[in-house]
Length: 358
Picture 1: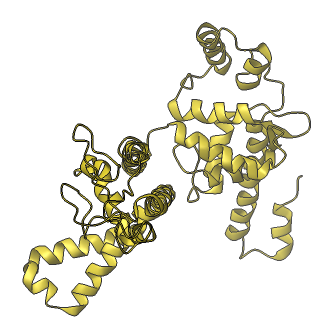
Picture 2: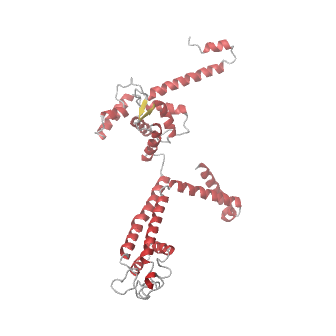
Picture 3: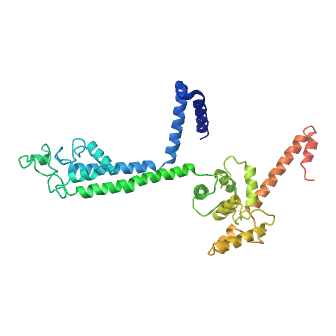
């Protein structure tokens, strides 16, 4: 995406500076233009994953109806008076049948084609769907040119095809395009349901048995895999992620695991800043618990205690306390290394005394 943006900016600047004619006179500029167009096509196709399946469904529909049309109406004579079955509009070959169906799908005089495929046209009572004299049906009965090859099956055939194409397939095709257009233009900086899908997918990598909990050591790795704003992102430094986990302070189970609900709720709460500003965390938690009980009255006490620990639970082990210990240890190691760098000029015996606990 970054390189596509860079090439696009280069294309716009060059086209503005050189003009259309001068820009495309240079083969290298044409090559850059092809790269830009190809990149955008690749991005669109990669995000419209459902579109090929819709196209395949349309092809199958046309194939089935074309084969049926060839069997039912392929022996109708061409250029009969008052008939829409002509040299260019018939079911005698598969390509011609597909073209007739495509024309019918667009709504162009599909009713006339339908009436020309029945044995008698309504209100006229004149047989128009005569058999082609070169067909098998036309050779029977001494090659009677007035033998009818039409069928009343044309009514359900054409009507069902037009309804399926006009009201189902085309709308489905448009719906897929609109859905993916919404995906491409979505503001990913705003927390939404699509972030939950990513969280569930990545959580399952650490919880393949779907127990609803993972090891506390995997939490920071998981959240660095999840894209912002819900997660930290791959570019987030490890220390910064640990500091954020200290503020989130999720409850830690006795077996050293963290619950799914507690982790997700803490992420949403931190991102949306729900009752997070203040020095008294117990008071903020109680206020949030009151709001949750008021809005979601059927929330079980167990689930509520899991996502928002009640007051007086400060002695419980939490993820925040674990990562706070980790940060203290890291700070102490850095402090020792800094002292070692400052006293490099001292003898080895004096440097060793710096790290003693006395």
